[in-house]
Length: 327
Image (cartoon, rainbow, N blue to C red):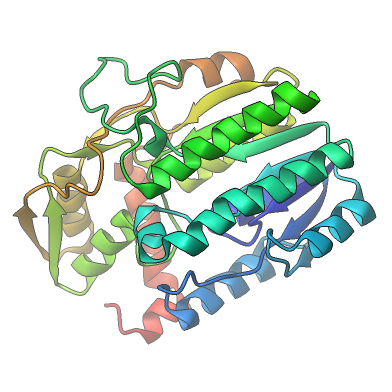
């Protein structure tokens, strides 16, 4: 199958590309390798080089998804059957730092891809959204929030992700484009940037610093990157996911304090300071993944005890982080 992956050199994207290639699919990647204006360029370059050299062997094109002519050329040349759209501003902090550019990428870029997908008869458009679309849902249901839960996003990132879902659904309604929408949560693991919750916790502990926990009872459905990749790939190639929405998470809520304590334990150093919850972020928790399990056999397996240990081992062995004197 011919598959176009936008953001295919990214944290999640490079794993998706590697798994698709291992399954025998013909993959094309579009990735402009942006630093979003806040990520250290040397760190990003190191991560992209490792992802490209070790995991991504297909054709890679350095186009911004807002580039109509460039993206049209890719579609015209390779005629993808499936598009997996991962290219986006990756989280709320990044959008808040430049909301105008975030909106252009997450809205204008998405519209460009949707128009081209209709024009070139793409069989399925896979939109990777976020659990942030739900807004506050902490302790709502014992088994976790499922895909029918009302979406009331808090913050520009969640709002833009939900608007993206609506745009995709409207194109499906108007044009017959088939889609699958996926909602991951708190993805972490090797080859991620430092500026994310788990990365900050582990690296701060490894530097014998103080981990800032904004709300000891606040929880997230931490998802190891390999589990997220498995879910995205399985949903994308399945014939049983047309015009559906799925939570792609571990399916188990863990508190920020638990995560910080585990980081300190694994690193053997560091301290924890508990602060008030950050009002700029919704209170979240466990999501329900039953629909994904039943429809395409999604089976996440990695809890934070294993996932943090694997991420820590990668950080210890990383050439980039060893040069940054992580002990």
